[in-house]
Image (cartoon, rainbow, N blue to C red; front, side, top):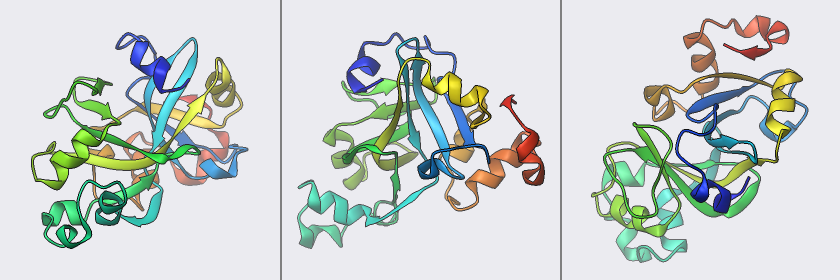
Length: 202
């Protein structure tokens, strides 16, 4: 599934929308080792999600300068919460493009609701708003996304590649990215030492 499919897809049509995918030891793709993916869309044509627990080296102010949202001399005057925003590695697809997962209190024409609490926006409008301190209460920025073709994600789940569970906005937008993997598993009562025997849904 690509972004064009996501825009055409009716809200709530995919049964894994607004779910976390937690990579299991059986995950064959090393790029997703110990990753947590937030599923933005899932349907018959495939799935699209954002890895939310892998950090980029690039700082958010540097990204804003690179994209021409602010000038370099303006970057040092950004609000503290904007300067400290961590840029995530959202996935292997379209890694030069930015995606913002955010709370539903901020919506522009291009925003795509994933749930009542979470939206996905992939246009520069939201970056301008965040840089000016007028953005959503909660937001995370990622470069790239993760995509699966028709039936591919279902196959990976059946092969014990992923554990799925409902997404918690507090965990999604939490500041402690490094411990997100373990905290999500703990929140659904999964012991990390027993992961090899876990399959399917929580």
